[in-house]
Image (cartoon, rainbow over all chains, first blue to last red):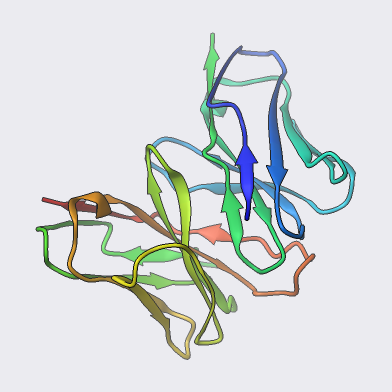
Length: 109
Length: 116
């Protein structure tokens, strides 16, 4: 089976850096995705990792360690609009994506 | 390119009724996945269709079913609705590439179903 854990809530200050962790246990591994979901909206794709290491995309970076079953999403220079839920999802040995319950990030001024 | 569209956006039904939701994927995408999202459980996978065949299925009762047409559009049906079926139903489309590729799912806006 699949099990994905991430913190339920986090709070940070505008302009700061925040790291959202995700740990997973899956039967097979074919990539890890991060999505952002604003309240009342659909999830939007942020990043994809399938090999170990860091992927950087502007203010957002995502890291993966397959041996540790661990990933994190790093958000730099936080803005108020970054307040949202961040979802970690893993594709296992088939094509389906299993999502964590999401981390609700609140950015305060 | 137009995004994933879902109809209707909002639906109110009563217990025991049935409902059909529709999803039109991004042009060229052959895979459509359906999810149920509730505050307590998060995003839960219902099923995935690829080239008109169900390729994966989640752990939902048989009241939940789906199909995909030759143009990749997909429908989801829930029969004998229960109060607990109230949720946001999201569909996502992707190209349907091989495992290990960056085959990203793009989500539609969802259908908000309320069962009274």
